[in-house]
Image (tube, rainbow, N blue to C red; front, side, top):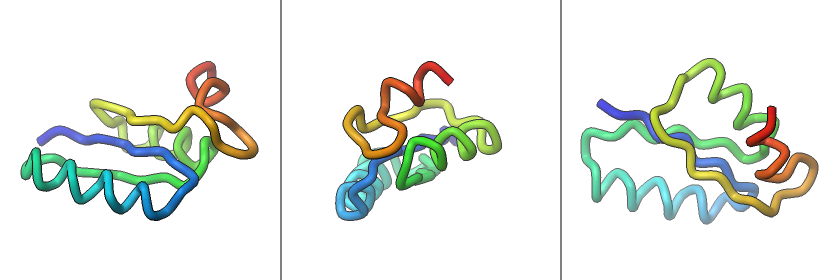
Length: 68
């Protein structure tokens, strides 16, 4: 089973992307985070195979999250 971490500050997009991934890849575990800092914590603890990351977020944007 693969793990995908989706990081976005918009809750509705997190829900849409999660549902879409689960429909397209039924054996995929989708993990969500609502901010860059939360995403970093989840990436370190969950060890996802793939990360889908919003570039423009308040606080820590996607570029900053990539460098941490």
